[in-house]
Amino acid sequence: MIHVAKAVDCTAVSREVQKLLSLREVARKEKNFAESDRLRDEIQKLGYLVNDKPEGYELLKIGDSDVKPANSYLVLFGSGEIAPSSVDIYRQLFLSLKKRDLSIALLTTPAGFQPNVEAVYQEIKDFLLASLPDFNLTINIVFANRAEQANDPSIVSQLDFADIIFTGPGSPTYAVKHLKNTLMIKKIIERVKNGATLILASAATITFSTHALPVYEIYKVGEDLHWLDGLDVFRELWHPTTIIPHFNNYEGGSTLDTTYCYIGKDRATKLLAKLPSTDSVIGIDEHTALIIDLNTAIEQVKGKGSIHRIV
Image (cartoon, rainbow, N blue to C red; front, side, top):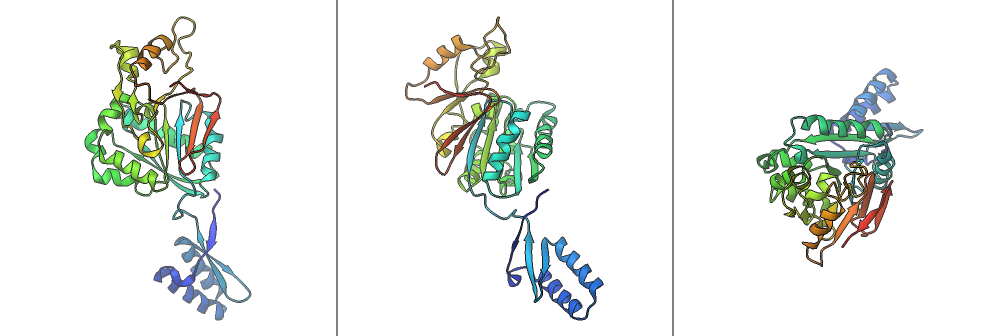
């Protein structure tokens, strides 16, 4: 791990630290170096380093967890959010936040209906910890699998100090149902407007859109072509947009068109015709991320594919 340390005013720290510093100065004057070293260790346990100088000392605070990120982003993954190709995307993104101690909240709602929801989001946590050892990541899985949990203040408050909020795998329609008009969505918008970064992947990019594509209902169940109202969060943070992830998916091979997030081009064309002509629709290829700087509105595309401005 890479720790950062910055000089602080000794009079601005807690009384406990100030007391230990005073006792250490006494020990040094008495040349009781064993006691001086012990007190140094006690001070370090409280998050500070003592840098002795020929005259006096300098106090350094370990870490930068209390520093506000330098930038705020909206990151949209078409897929591949825990693929090896995404590691450099995360690293460059995190570096631009200009802090090493980062707090990440993983929100489970899109996969809340799955019996293995804990394992799904634990895999994301494990991937980030293993892939980015040059950051000091504190990752909290926030279990808000149903609307009542997404409206529970004690659960919602787990986002209060998150530098990064992440949600992704699951069902878009399930996530819309259980996040619509909840305290959780209000908290996400509030946190991002106050400097946090929001990372959405796959299903979650649909969920937060103006219009939500009911992928499973059309592709697996065979329901008629239709749209659902999405959470429309992009309107609050960026501009009203509908996202279609997995845009260049080819799992169906030569016999089944699974582009346009498994719907296929023919059905997608009919679906797009149902939207107002003024709507913005963006397709994001697999293993590709669209990164929007929320301070400057500058957009970047990272990864293996492209984005497609459909409407």
